[in-house]
Image (tube, rainbow, N blue to C red; front, side, top):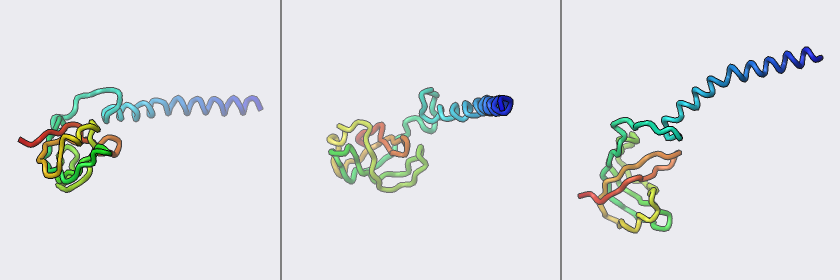
Length: 120
């Protein structure tokens, strides 16, 4: 009985030891997607600004609805959609009809505007 327990325990330890490097590799790959380790962004994703027009302002939720051109860094075609602003006080700065340039990022499935400015 002791031998069977010892063999089972050894097999479990061995399988855990063999799985650990694979799990570490998988986790390391996630660091480049916004993890704690900061790495330089590819040149095509550094503050790409997209032109758009504000069609609705929701100051209560900190969201803007924007009719926008193609968002290249998100590989998204032109359309009208709702975005959350990283700075929830910012909607007060905009009104319906404002032309803007903005940078949006996908943060855990939510589209967040990290930078927005009036179009010159």
